[in-house]
Length: 156
Length: 156
DNA sequence: CCGGATGACTTGAAGCGTCAACTAATGTCG
DNA sequence: CGACATTAGTTGACGCTTCAAGTCATCCGG
Image (tube, rainbow over all chains, first blue to last red; front, side):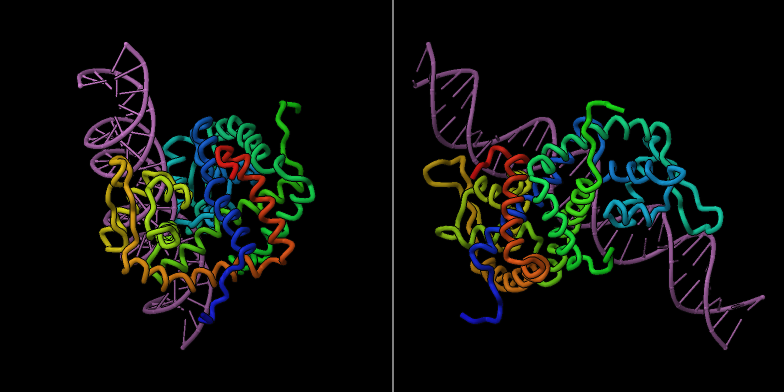
């Protein structure tokens, strides 16, 4: 049965299944808490957070998209909706008309500040406090190594 | 600034950011490869795989939904589409008319067999081979611990 | 053995993400 | 300078997931 494919061993499969299940459930859990308590998706939260911690509470679109791990197109749609809700504003950059700069409004900042404690607490409960400090280090190392394979463009 | 929230320390944040980025990118990478090479989403692949390895190549819907980490509703839609493509069949269980049993067809099995090598190879390249055997063990432990928090209903 | 409760799905509508096409501004090179 | 390429972002359509509501079968208490 040598078809040239290295199938997964029992223990490899077990690790992969556990990790895969985690990957598919954790985002849902995070989204659920944020949506319920703050009316934001996790992606929207990341967008607002990315803006709030940037100089001038502003950031150009492509930059923000990279920060939030999403496509530019997705970001554009999301920012449009956030703008309609009054949480961000958009305007072209002065020096380069192609660039759009998004800015978080006071209302958006309020929503973010209200959402942050719950979100951070959830992350802590579900992830950080579930692990020992050593495991946290291990996790970062593991994630970085896999990321290097998945996304070789961003060596960081 | 003691607002009762335990914010994340630098190293906690770094671990979380790396892991979060991974969680949002890896599913996309897996979907991309499967879609490109086999015309299947990762979820569809899991459904077919779940059926193929079950006795009688059949499984009831709720069971299959749990296996594939998706909601019953989502599974129902997906199975309907797979049925239209001729990859699975559905029929009510004989002993309990509420239960629907899905079965993978020969055509579905062929598609799965054609898709599996590429998918497994991708998982190996991106995940398994990026890590040492020790890290693989660490990853399983970590994933299990977090999963226990995220999804306390499934202690396994 | 009848009627309400529960269980196991299915369905339709609404919202979000992706893809491809499009617009507009800026570089570049002869 | 002028044409063409490139960069940055937006848009619309389409497909998929979710949510709430609906269907049908089975269970259970009186």
